[in-house]
Length: 339
Image (cartoon, rainbow, N blue to C red; front, side, top):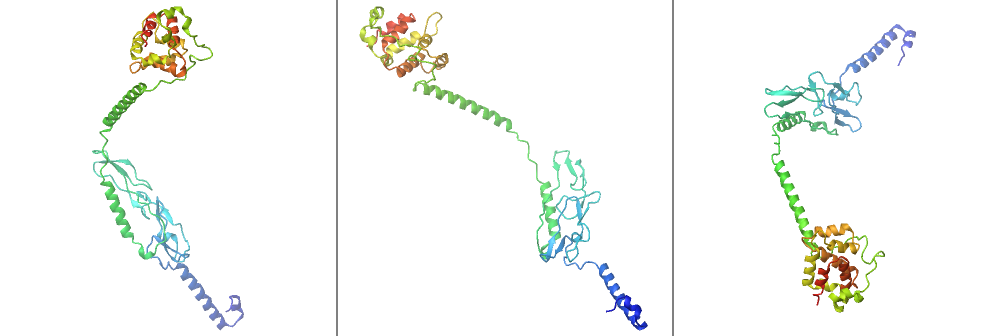
């Protein structure tokens, strides 16, 4: 092969032959550059992938129109950008490779939002207050053979989905929300009343326990001495009653009932169960709560149960001494009925 410079140092015949050779070379390269793609992929929405050696789908970009074969040739080389912006009055919401013309509102509908590059126009029905929104069908990029791609079938399926979505009736407003709220409120109130009732019934069978500030055996309260030598009490109560355990008062229902009638009522100027609890150093909160449960249990009975459980060695004489301090001789007389 001769170079172009060598053509000037040979004969005229050789110059002609050398010129024809280079003319053929330039003509062949020019024809190659002007020749279009060979179209290995018949579908314009696909391009040739030299790595997998098959046609793959082009990426879909909302707001942009797809260039045929993503701007690639049949050798996988890129000659231009794969997308271009949608023209005015067209849009691409990502459901198809190409931009589509914008829709127009039907008769009886008003425009809610205008059409833009990525969204179709949104219209509202003035009569039923329903809004028509275009359907967006997401499409994923994957490797598929070119023979399995059918653009017409994909477009038909997308159209059917959009029609079905627009014909779906809207959900009416919930009309039973207010009655349901009222029913729930009534049920909660009934449940609360039931719980309170059960608590009151439970108080009849259990001893009321509290975190006492102090009790009859606290260091600040010295137990009363046995009143055996108290002549005033012995005039009313005999020695057997004075030395009997305090539990005897709880066991004798007749005497207990009479003491309840005498001491539980709150009468102005007369000391009652509240004063007796105070002498035993029970806190005011305990007394208040005990009186709040008066309908289900006597405050005096609750007090005697608390004292006997804490001080089982207490006798009737201790109670009589406290009643004498309260000037309740009528209650002391009731203790004389113990047998």
